[in-house]
Amino acid sequence: MRIARFITGENPQYGILDEDADELVALRGDPIYGDLETTGQRVALDEVRLLSPVIPRSKVVGIGRNYADHAAEMGNEVPDEPLVFLKPNTSVIGPDDPIVLPAFSGEVHHEAELAVVISRLCKFVPAEKASDVIFGYTVANDVTARDVQRTDGQWTRAKGFDTSCPLGPYLALDLDVSDLAVRARVDGELRQDGRTSQLVHKVPELIAYVSSIFTLLPGDVILTGTPAGVGPIDVGQRVEVEVEGIGAFSNPVVRRD
Amino acid sequence: MRIARFITGENPQYGILDEDADELVALRGDPIYGDLETTGQRVALDEVRLLSPVIPRSKVVGIGRNYADHAAEMGNEVPDEPLVFLKPNTSVIGPDDPIVLPAFSGEVHHEAELAVVISRLCKFVPAEKASDVIFGYTVANDVTARDVQRTDGQWTRAKGFDTSCPLGPYLALDLDVSDLAVRARVDGELRQDGRTSQLVHKVPELIAYVSSIFTLLPGDVILTGTPAGVGPIDVGQRVEVEVEGIGAFSNPVVRRD
Image (cartoon, rainbow over the protein chains, first blue to last red):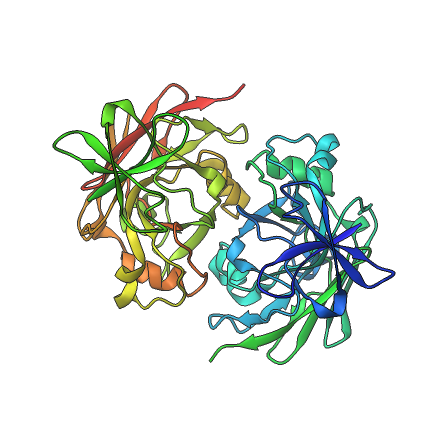
């Protein structure tokens, strides 16, 4: 089952994707905080604007160097333990929202990633119980200002700026994420093409590690890292990220004067 | 004027401190999101439990190496630009709440700091307009796992773990923060004793810099850095932080088995 957050008029709603009819079956309230109860309303997919499937109330937790081939292309070793960083909820945007290149960077990269959305408050979750705290999965672009990532030391500015965390297009529930394609395209050209089977630290291990540091809240997002093939995006381009079984979405790239 | 967030029964409330009477004059709602409207209720200060004056809906932004004497004691240079990191809202606790030493660290340090609380949604705030977006000031302890700060590279685990951001005891409004004492005591012994006049990057400059990266939301907190004298805290100790004109509060230090 795939769920979208969308808007037709004034208020965001959630809906279950009916793939055969290309329609969304509207849900009452926020399914991350309640049950999946439909309202009876159906909306054609081409009449809605899809939004980020979740705006975390607390945090987006990123994981660095979690594909060996990406660590290698950056000239880095794979760390023994997951390399954890934070993106604030103010960095989250949805499908088709513009990625605004920050004035402080001249080299901004795409990073296609599988993202995990947490279902409930939890701490110290053992890896074998990780599935109990997963609401679903979505697709992320961990947009990174590569030049200031190299020079700042801390990655906060490089990975935390406004619009640096596109999420979408759907939340996929009950998905087997052990071997899914993870792709990025720039203006239609394939740039990243990895598989989640290449993840150094798998999803259950990431949840165990991250929840040993922080209390996780419903709607918190964990980005699982990016495969090889990262590269620059520039004004006027459109960057698409995709995870097999969840979907694909894209964002135009702009710069404010 | 100083404002407390407190609890007597079930629900947290805000109140204005009446220093002469040692009482709190209760406020309607959350003053960060509305006006300062009193309910008429008065509560004796010794009958309430003070809470963290704010739980950010988005982020706590930390600033590293912002006192030259502290940068020197750590063997670091003062950076040209503010060194920015994030602590999640799940790290925030209030006065008297225990600081829980994380199992992954054997060396946790106190860091007394002046903290700025943001009043409204803003981006690209010029330094000369910074006062327009400041709700008030509070006191923070930027608790840091020094050993993993050295080894992790990113400071997320070292500075983001649960209970690593005690805030309190009051929100001080209309305070001149240009030259205030910033102190930490462990079991009553003075360990840090700096002055905000020693800040390398002053509050208006920090707000300008931080708001050039992130949209700031009402209730977001900016920690301004810590003066020299940081050092370890251990189980059974009580650590107090103080900023002149705002107040002091303390937390016991514990470790879970």
